[in-house]
Image (spheres, rainbow, N blue to C red):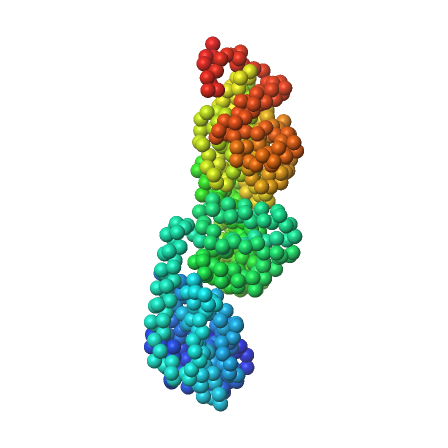
Length: 559
């Protein structure tokens, strides 16, 4: 017997059988219902004293039968890829009269149904039919369009297929227009959460926009939600989630990105209720790292962080994936799929951890060789996208120019340069820092970041043109303290040519930094002089040829 969903307690076997027989019904593909189906539903619903719902596909086949309102029908994931509609329609009875309720319309919208219909039942007979379809995203009406209420027999010949085809054509046309305007990137709705942080919450949302852009997403809509404490189920509350889904629909977005770390339960509930892909800030950062990882070491580090994030989020399906033990002296069926998945992840994590230890040992040997060479080391650190790589290029006159993206550089970079009065130096760069750095990611990159301890001088690069520069400075210094880095610092106020005069003077006075523009060359000579003085103060012995004439920062001779 086919399964009956919803409120089935107290049903007699004969009633269950009659409900199961509804699976054998068939409606013409382009019709909402037939007269025979309307009479059958009305009579059975009146006899049970409960509403009955049917979920049908575009071929008119009944896929689900439920006792209860529209929310009792589980909607399967759509198999249709080419359209924005799910390909399902829902027909249910209303015993007490009245039109489509708000929950009915929410089911229509959240599940992208082709249509939802409510059949009024009076004294066991079908009467009025209420019908609603989605509105096109750019329509001025609500998210749905409710058709005029009519006696059900007037809708028997109404062409539902033509209405759905017209709606999908409009959806497709608008989606193509958005793709041409914004490129082929995945469109996303961004949600920042203000838990009483005020200006910092706005800065975090702006940073989330940059993270999404770096990951390749198109920001279709963004919103800062005030929420002193997160809802344990939906993070921002069910009402706000419905609003966000509406924005996603109207902006043709398929992804929701939250600016906080979601629990596994919250992510599952949000995906289930919205039908959208749901990412949190940690996943977004991990995605960016995965995209930018090029060297074997960076790939291992990123994969390790991703697996550690994924492991506690593995979930089973109730008792289906639980361990089924037998009685005394028996072993049961053995490990379940969930446990096997966890075992594989744990084995892979152990293997990657071993590889990282081996790479760390090789890196340590390389550091010893650099120390034996006596060449001083200047490590460049800073918040992500502060301009570290561009500054290294200007100082060493080689390497990449850098990109205006977050975490554009993951692999440790080492470049040789020359400082008048000192001689040859090594500039090293590593991954940029960020506020609330994911713990698994920080742990995976710890062996790389520990190179900072061997530096003779740390060049802390701070983007002076960005709002919140003072807070970003504090984030980097806190992370350096957490890593146990105690090397002398020299602060560079980068992108000085793009910074406001008042802001630049405030940072110079507050932090005693050197204004520099790597692109225009502003302050580069002063920076080199300050670096040389700091290295000499640290006891670095200048090379014999360090004071020879130079051209473009490169010694003319090494005699």
